[in-house]
Length: 356
Image (cartoon, rainbow, N blue to C red; front, side, top):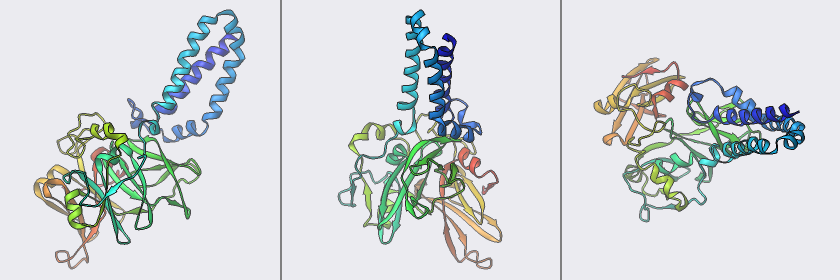
């Protein structure tokens, strides 16, 4: 009976640690293909907890009667670990959405115009969100031109996407649940399914295989965005998160000294930047430093010329394709273009072509 109490405690501690370990950036956790295991542990969390609590209760009476102080000493760390891993180390307990969304026009804007932003225009309205802010929040739910949008950013893979939060014809809400292979994952409220930030794909749960509609967005310096969209609204800082924003002050330039968010300055290193696109199901990427030094670089894919460019000292970039197979040098159409860490792009586009 006493062994039942001890085993219940040990099993509960082990479970709570593993449930968080597999979906948070802990040593070795993000390099394993553990998504299915992580979702199973999460989805059946109350079943596991009740089982281990039943084991503890089965032996608690005798254990506390014969060795009360030892029983207390065993129980206290268990309570502490359950609290720590559920209320302090869980993703949505570390990164919060803004408590109030405030926007200003160009005249009233207080954000430094040299800061990088994600910008989008829909139905005649434009809005921009500074990377320094959304890299902390990870997601911001809003609307642009009366269209619901979910603005996302993963600071650990350094890339932003804007999605429609409509799923199966209905508005959905999401919470940050953790990450897989260093990419943020969101859990939908309705089914508890998990969705990847990098491509909006549902990778676990009853909605597995579905994808969120993506809106094309631009990552540029705020001054460039306002030159293109002078009427744009700009997200202003939420005072409640001033310290969190300040911790990401060097994020735009890649100067943060962090094993997760820091940047490799060499080419094709794990945390080097790349510029990526997908054309006709073929992923292509360019090493950021080489492309920045050269200005532009082209590669032929399926008879089309794909040209990547970095301008304005690295604060503006684009990828364009030729319009026809016979007019490669006279016409260009913009393609989705993403800044990303090489380790992330390679993981989610294993058959990518290198453009330089």
